[in-house]
Every structure is written in structure tokens, then in C-alpha cells.
Length: 487
Image 1: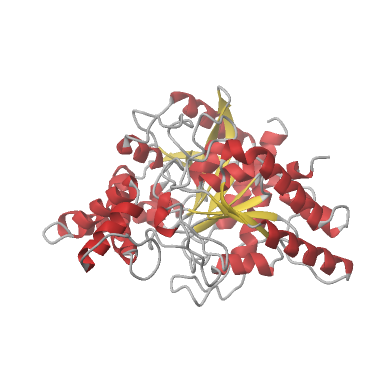
Image 2: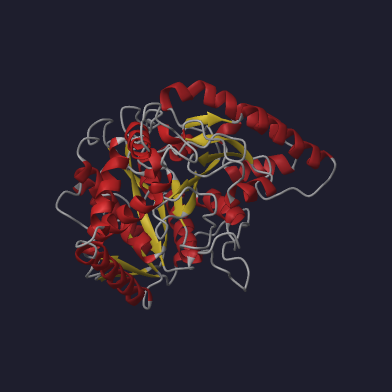
């Protein structure tokens, strides 16, 4: 039996029953990494020595009959913009090539408290800016399904690591689709939770009001399993949601899930605006098949309108780049990170350090954001984008007053070849068309595999209202059950 092919849920069960040890599981995954990593490049930094030590501690706990955590013994990848104490955190950039953080992000602390095993830091687009993991200073990650194609981005390393069996679970961040799009391209499940229910403390900011830490798993249960361990209020994060009634996500499921019950009577909206001229029609065919399955399992489906959604992409790129311009000002060659070797004045230090250490996409977005915030343009660009954001949120609020979830494609195009769009930023940005509105409104969303086109995976996006993760989880479990049972 190849234990790297088991679901995380099955791995956890076998560890708790002493059928396999945590050290055996971790060793098997490092062997898998050694086998495939040269072709995938999913990791920037590995954590082998510490991971094996942690695995031995988990095994000792089990041997002594001590209580073990929810993630006990499970191999986990962490996106490289989530800080890890004493383990290099680069954000995929030359700017932080040798940065060793002095503390753990809250989500990392929670993984450790749940006895999860951090295998290493996964590759990503530089500072999470990109949709293909091609802007990484450490080279592109390749899609395990077809290594000539991109895995999506910016969390492409995490998605590829889960798909290729290098880890059981992984963390990513999602600012405008950076979990859901690579989940779609790599044929795994990715969940972007509601803004504020997972702490962002220790996640290097790209755009504060849009960023959200989320998870990858091989199926819905695995992804929710992971999400359960990291969800909860954090006083260190001023945007963290304090839920006085307790846990929003539930980490335990019965051994057998009766998927048919999850979709009966569920009200689903289909936005007529979620299409565009450049969309691959074959993706629509797979989405249509998925919609018919929802109907066959008892869901009630109606077409709806989200009238301001067409402005979502433009509003997103104005707001996100404006926040990027502000957030990345801290990387100046003075406090930490890369410092230019040649300069005569303080201005030259700033200019040379940033010119040498930032990649082209990062520079592009900083310039766009600086322009949008500049005197004479802020009212015409940034403030208008904020107003559009409110209109989009209101559209979703109106829809969710009648419907439990909203369905759409995750991406308008199939995984494209490496190098195909890297020099065409506008074409790259269009890949986020269906995902960015979710971040603008702070909603929860999941990408789940729903079919193939010529061997390439298609993702279905399930969108839920704020703090209504239970709805997208039920929909995902119901749909996944239907697929597994050949409906």
C-alpha cells in the first residue's frame, strides 16, 4: 500500500489505530518529494529534520496513551508567505531570499498545537502576485497533471504538492482566487473561508482587506478537516472575527457520509453574468453537467442577476494594487531583506534595493497602485473602486437573502502552458474573473473538481455567504458524493 495516496482522513485514522506510525508516514512523503520534486518544484524550503523529530513526538504521545491533536502525524505544506519560526520564509522573492522569521504565524501555531507535521514551505508567485506561479524567484512550479502546464497561482506550490502526493494537506492564501484557481488547475479541493474567520497574523500582507488564509485537500472532507484546525478568533489579528457562539467549522464527520441528504431542498443561484466572450465553451459544458447533478440530488436552481459583477475585476485590481503599493513600502533595504551593495545616498539605497530584488510583476503592481493613490487620481480611481466594491457586496447580500449558495466556473480557461501568458498580464488577470468578486465581498468559496476537458481538470466554484461555510461544505460533500457514485 502506498500510504501517500491515502486521504488525510484515512491517514489520521490509521495513525490513531497504530496501523502506521507518524514517522513512517512522514518518511514516505519525503521519499515521494525526493522522487517527484525535480519535475514539479512545489517547494522552496524543506523542513525534514524538524518534521521527523515532530513525528517521533507524535508517535511517543500515541504510545503513552496521551490525547493527540486533530492533525496528528499529517504531512502539511505551508505557503511561503506564511511566516514560520526558524524556517526560511521568502514570499517567492529575492527580496526575502534569506529571511528567517523569529515567530510563527497563528495558523502555523495552530497546526503545531494540533500535532500537524510541517514538511516545508511551498512555492508561490512573488509576494502572491500572479496566477501561474511563474513569477517566483525560485523558478516556476509545474502542474503534476501535465508538467508542461502551469499549476495556477499564486498558491500553485501548495496545490501541486497536494496533487502530487508530496503532502496530505496544505495552506495557501487567497487575495483574488489564489487558492481556488490552482485548486481548479491541479484537480484538488481549495477553500477560501470568509474574511476574518482564519487569522492573518503572520501572513505577509499583499492586500489587507482582501487576503485570506485557506486550505487545500484531496477531497472536501480533508480540506474541511484542515480548516477546522486553523479556524478561530485571534486577538493578534484586528480583523479576526470573534464568534461568541463557538466554532463555525466542524472537523469530524461520520465514517460514511450520506451525500444525498446534503443537497435536498438547497436553493442555488446561477448568475447570468458569470460568462464572457473569451471563456472556453468546453468548461461551460462541464459546469452544465454539474448543475444537472445538483438538480438530480434535490437542489432547487434558478438563474439570478449580479448586475455590478462586470466591474469586479477592474475594482479589484485598483484596490489590490493600491494596498500593495502601501504594504510593500516596508521592503526598502534598511530593516531586513535584500540590500543593494552599491549606493551613495539613502534614496539610492531604496531605489537600487527595490529595483534589484523585486520582479517585474511586483514592480508593475506597485506602480499601478501608486498611480491610483496619487494626488488628482485617488478620487477618480481608488474611491470609485471602493464604491463599486460596496455595490458588488450589496448584489451578493440580495442574492443570499433568497439562496443558500451560488455556483459558477472557478476559471474561464483551462490550465495553460508554461510561458504562454507570462508576458501578457491582461490575459493573465482575466483568469481571476469569477473569483475576485468573492474577495471583494468577504464571502466564503470552494473550488471542487467537476470534470475534464482533454485530460485537463475543470473546477466548479461554490460560493456561500459570509460565515456560512456550512452551506458550501454541504454542497461540496453532496456533489462529491454524487460524482463518486457515478451520478
